[in-house]
Image 1: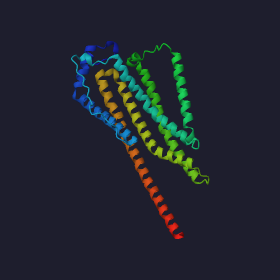
Image 2: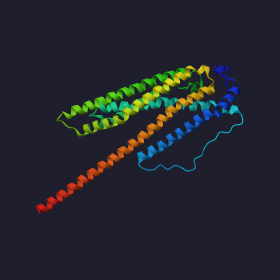
Image 3: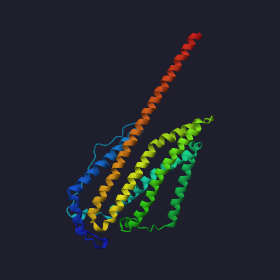
Image 4: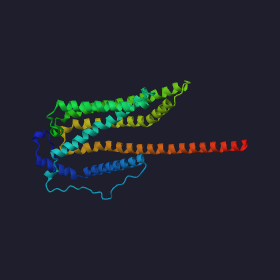
Length: 313
């Protein structure tokens, strides 16, 4: 495969032929098949997660179509600008949103720990404050750039995205590290609060309930966030290592190795969904056992009072 060292020297015909040969190679076909299997598994697990959450089946239409790409000229394999912006843009969103989701969950658990007595009634106020603040930010950004002069598609498809990728990588790396660290601190803090409250005579039902909910939630969140931080840091390290050899590889070879590294993220996503599904089943089974125990206690109390009524005539 021809090595391409600069985007200004790219020969589209040679590039298209290079891409075609790479796509037809057995190794690349194997990687694509594994990726398709993992992504399809993730899709099925998402449907199962929704079904478990809603406690009913999700109707899936039977007429599922498989889209096949036929082409007559290798040049048709080159990605149009609009499609490139969609694919690359969605990748940036996924790269930012997934670490941000873990980070926001950590902030919510931190709020539940620091404001243990007020957490139950302060959720709506915080939601309104965040919503108004975000809406204000969007309005100010719109007034700051009324002509929308930023050429988003060209920026995403341009080689200058290297700086953007570096900034995003640094930001998200710090986010996952801070998330794992503060999750550990939240877990330790909740255990200390539980030990201190066991020695205090003053008892609050809502505070005890929220404390138990925090401890139970962190049993799931802490291992998942530590695992995600490990996988994400490993993924970033492999990507940085691959990018250091980018100038020595052809575009097709570079994309091939990038797809191999992406398998790590797909595999983690599938395992995460399996854990979420099992956790929901655990909560449901635990609730059933609790309901059965409560029903037995109520029945025993009813029988006991009936016996007392018989004895007292």
